[in-house]
Length: 161
Image 1 (cartoon, rainbow, N blue to C red):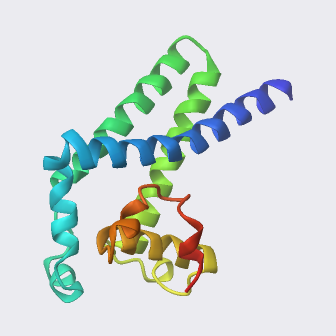
Image 2 (image 1 turned 60 degrees about the vertical axis):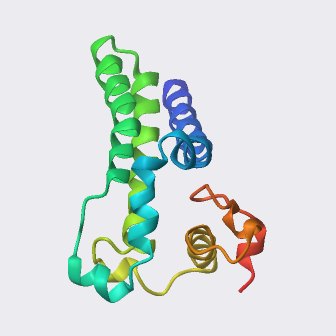
Protein backbone atom coordinates (compact mmCIF):
# COMPACT_ATOMS: atom_id res chain seq x y z
CA UNK A 1 0.00 0.00 0.00
CA UNK A 2 2.87 2.38 0.81
CA UNK A 3 4.45 1.79 -2.60
CA UNK A 4 1.11 2.55 -4.28
CA UNK A 5 0.74 5.84 -2.37
CA UNK A 6 4.37 6.72 -3.04
CA UNK A 7 3.99 6.06 -6.77
CA UNK A 8 0.57 7.75 -6.83
CA UNK A 9 2.08 10.85 -5.27
CA UNK A 10 4.86 10.81 -7.88
CA UNK A 11 2.30 10.45 -10.68
CA UNK A 12 0.11 13.30 -9.39
CA UNK A 13 3.15 15.51 -8.71
CA UNK A 14 4.45 14.95 -12.24
CA UNK A 15 1.01 15.73 -13.70
CA UNK A 16 0.72 18.97 -11.72
CA UNK A 17 4.33 19.96 -12.42
CA UNK A 18 3.65 19.63 -16.14
CA UNK A 19 1.26 22.60 -15.93
CA UNK A 20 4.23 24.70 -14.81
CA UNK A 21 6.39 23.16 -17.56
CA UNK A 22 3.69 23.94 -20.14
CA UNK A 23 3.32 27.53 -18.89
CA UNK A 24 7.09 28.12 -18.78
CA UNK A 25 7.80 26.57 -22.19
CA UNK A 26 4.84 28.35 -23.79
CA UNK A 27 5.87 31.75 -22.44
CA UNK A 28 9.66 31.57 -22.75
CA UNK A 29 10.35 28.96 -25.44
CA UNK A 30 7.35 28.95 -27.80
CA UNK A 31 6.98 32.72 -27.61
CA UNK A 32 10.76 33.03 -27.41
CA UNK A 33 13.54 31.37 -29.37
CA UNK A 34 11.29 28.69 -30.92
CA UNK A 35 8.63 31.13 -32.08
CA UNK A 36 9.35 29.91 -35.63
CA UNK A 37 7.77 26.56 -34.64
CA UNK A 38 4.87 28.08 -32.70
CA UNK A 39 3.96 30.95 -35.02
CA UNK A 40 1.91 28.86 -37.45
CA UNK A 41 -0.31 27.79 -34.57
CA UNK A 42 -1.33 31.41 -34.01
CA UNK A 43 -1.62 32.10 -37.74
CA UNK A 44 -3.88 29.08 -38.32
CA UNK A 45 -6.09 30.18 -35.44
CA UNK A 46 -6.71 33.49 -37.23
CA UNK A 47 -8.43 31.67 -40.09
CA UNK A 48 -12.24 31.61 -39.93
CA UNK A 49 -13.64 28.49 -38.23
CA UNK A 50 -15.34 27.39 -41.47
CA UNK A 51 -12.01 27.41 -43.34
CA UNK A 52 -10.31 25.43 -40.56
CA UNK A 53 -13.10 22.83 -40.62
CA UNK A 54 -12.96 22.54 -44.42
CA UNK A 55 -9.17 22.06 -44.31
CA UNK A 56 -9.53 19.35 -41.67
CA UNK A 57 -6.59 18.32 -39.53
CA UNK A 58 -3.48 20.11 -40.78
CA UNK A 59 -0.07 19.45 -39.26
CA UNK A 60 1.63 22.52 -37.84
CA UNK A 61 5.29 23.04 -36.99
CA UNK A 62 3.93 23.67 -33.49
CA UNK A 63 3.07 19.95 -33.31
CA UNK A 64 6.80 19.25 -33.02
CA UNK A 65 6.55 20.31 -29.37
CA UNK A 66 4.77 17.01 -28.78
CA UNK A 67 8.15 15.31 -29.19
CA UNK A 68 9.78 17.60 -26.66
CA UNK A 69 7.29 16.38 -24.06
CA UNK A 70 6.84 12.79 -25.21
CA UNK A 71 10.48 11.74 -25.48
CA UNK A 72 11.36 12.32 -21.80
CA UNK A 73 8.20 10.42 -20.77
CA UNK A 74 9.16 7.50 -23.02
CA UNK A 75 12.73 7.47 -21.68
CA UNK A 76 11.47 7.48 -18.09
CA UNK A 77 8.98 4.71 -18.86
CA UNK A 78 11.53 2.46 -20.58
CA UNK A 79 14.21 3.12 -17.96
CA UNK A 80 11.76 2.60 -15.08
CA UNK A 81 10.69 -0.80 -16.38
CA UNK A 82 14.24 -1.80 -17.32
CA UNK A 83 15.69 -1.10 -13.88
CA UNK A 84 12.42 -1.85 -12.04
CA UNK A 85 12.30 1.61 -10.53
CA UNK A 86 8.55 2.13 -10.69
CA UNK A 87 8.60 5.69 -9.42
CA UNK A 88 10.10 6.58 -12.82
CA UNK A 89 7.20 4.78 -14.48
CA UNK A 90 4.77 6.76 -12.30
CA UNK A 91 6.39 10.04 -13.30
CA UNK A 92 6.22 8.98 -16.96
CA UNK A 93 2.52 8.16 -16.58
CA UNK A 94 1.90 11.56 -14.95
CA UNK A 95 3.61 13.33 -17.86
CA UNK A 96 1.68 11.20 -20.36
CA UNK A 97 -1.67 11.86 -18.66
CA UNK A 98 -0.97 15.59 -18.74
CA UNK A 99 -0.13 15.26 -22.44
CA UNK A 100 -3.45 13.51 -23.03
CA UNK A 101 -5.26 16.24 -21.08
CA UNK A 102 -3.47 18.89 -23.11
CA UNK A 103 -4.41 17.20 -26.38
CA UNK A 104 -8.06 16.87 -25.40
CA UNK A 105 -8.45 20.38 -23.98
CA UNK A 106 -6.24 22.28 -26.41
CA UNK A 107 -6.54 20.42 -29.70
CA UNK A 108 -10.05 18.94 -29.49
CA UNK A 109 -12.08 21.22 -27.21
CA UNK A 110 -10.53 24.61 -27.97
CA UNK A 111 -9.07 24.44 -31.49
CA UNK A 112 -11.39 21.63 -32.66
CA UNK A 113 -8.67 20.12 -34.81
CA UNK A 114 -10.53 16.83 -34.49
CA UNK A 115 -14.31 16.69 -34.23
CA UNK A 116 -15.54 14.84 -31.16
CA UNK A 117 -18.92 16.43 -30.57
CA UNK A 118 -19.55 15.36 -26.96
CA UNK A 119 -16.29 17.10 -25.94
CA UNK A 120 -17.10 20.25 -27.85
CA UNK A 121 -20.37 21.31 -26.24
CA UNK A 122 -22.03 21.82 -22.84
CA UNK A 123 -18.91 23.00 -21.02
CA UNK A 124 -18.70 23.51 -17.26
CA UNK A 125 -17.93 26.93 -15.81
CA UNK A 126 -14.30 25.87 -15.41
CA UNK A 127 -13.97 24.62 -19.00
CA UNK A 128 -15.64 27.82 -20.20
CA UNK A 129 -12.96 29.77 -18.32
CA UNK A 130 -10.23 27.61 -19.89
CA UNK A 131 -11.66 28.42 -23.32
CA UNK A 132 -11.91 32.17 -22.55
CA UNK A 133 -8.32 32.22 -21.27
CA UNK A 134 -7.01 30.53 -24.40
CA UNK A 135 -9.12 32.76 -26.64
CA UNK A 136 -7.66 35.81 -24.88
CA UNK A 137 -4.18 34.43 -25.56
CA UNK A 138 -4.88 33.93 -29.26
CA UNK A 139 -6.97 37.08 -29.78
CA UNK A 140 -5.71 39.63 -27.23
CA UNK A 141 -7.63 42.89 -26.90
CA UNK A 142 -4.77 44.39 -24.90
CA UNK A 143 -1.38 43.43 -23.46
CA UNK A 144 -2.94 42.02 -20.27
CA UNK A 145 -5.04 39.57 -22.33
CA UNK A 146 -1.85 37.98 -23.59
CA UNK A 147 -1.04 36.52 -20.16
CA UNK A 148 -2.65 33.09 -20.36
CA UNK A 149 0.24 30.78 -21.14
CA UNK A 150 -0.91 27.81 -19.06
CA UNK A 151 -3.60 25.30 -19.90
CA UNK A 152 -5.38 24.44 -16.65
CA UNK A 153 -4.25 27.34 -14.47
CA UNK A 154 -4.78 30.88 -15.70
CA UNK A 155 -5.72 34.34 -14.39
CA UNK A 156 -8.92 34.35 -12.35
CA UNK A 157 -10.45 37.08 -14.54
CA UNK A 158 -11.35 34.43 -17.12
CA UNK A 159 -13.94 32.93 -14.75
CA UNK A 160 -16.01 36.06 -15.27
CA UNK A 161 -18.15 36.01 -18.40
